[in-house]
Image (cartoon, rainbow, N blue to C red; front, side, top):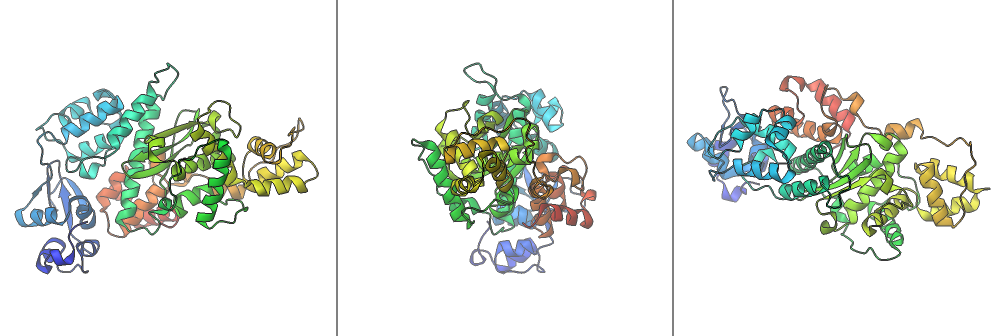
Length: 476
């Protein structure tokens, strides 16, 4: 990110970041600088009152374009960002086609016009940077470096999404709405990861403590149990204690991007790789409205993300509710069987479950106790008890099943209903919004960038609102 102090003179650092900034490296100087830069489609310049492009904080500009580009912009009035006449038109068109979108479809998703799309995809034509940014998001493109750097991984993800929307066997695939939601989720995952890196979040590499494991041998469920115990050990968790909050463990402890969005009612969640970033998507519709089902969905996707080698994920793994049942008969893929076994064993360690059954007066009472203690559905608990303790589970008809406690709902529930800015899409609410707010508070991004990321306006980002977002999102 920029040049070291030894490669950049103090005079050049003062020139770019202002003599009032402090520090011994371009990054330190940028984080303490009050300077802003403005980018258009093809050029970067030092910001002025008359500038109409996207205003960038010095740290964000440095991270995106490097010190030499910023120095050129200051010394010569502007610095070129696009070195190929076909860009960014070529990148936009390739990614649109990879996803299988028509220009009209992309225009609708981006809240732009078809003419906007055609103009943006025409080499040599200049578009508003605001239009380009809006077109980039539904294509899972990092809008900061559009036309400046290649977009690694996003095009392959688009191809994978298109393949899943039209299955070769003729069965129902992803709907166009699901494809759009997952593409936007990939954008959120990539941008949150880059923001965490920009602000130097201490846990940004939390998932890297887990070496990929390619063992899916028979019996596959035992591999899942083993990885569940290993995950608890690596995380320093009690080997048999309940997981207090899957949402917090994923988003806060591991700093894994967790995106909440609306998908088809049959879809539970997904694991997405976008570039070098990996994240989890959870559906806010359907069975996940139950906190106990949602915990199982999150644990299943975590099993994929922590342990599956990248080729197994193929940039995208989408799971349906019916496939996440403990003894699912729908999917016999070893990758899914292992993830299912990981999920139930991570939430409800087998040794603890077996002990509870042994100490209980009857099997149904043990099932209900397991559900309450470990925060899993009665259906999942019954299947798990049967598998672990080798007992026949028959729940009495008409019995009243236990329900999640209010405390558990509070720990796991989404923050959508309490978000202080109206009409912000669910995918942007929660941890992502908190990271954006923290980056703004640390002078890593501009208010213009924060508003763009949250799809709001700069006047909505007053100090009270920022404080409320940080309070909802928790520590970053």
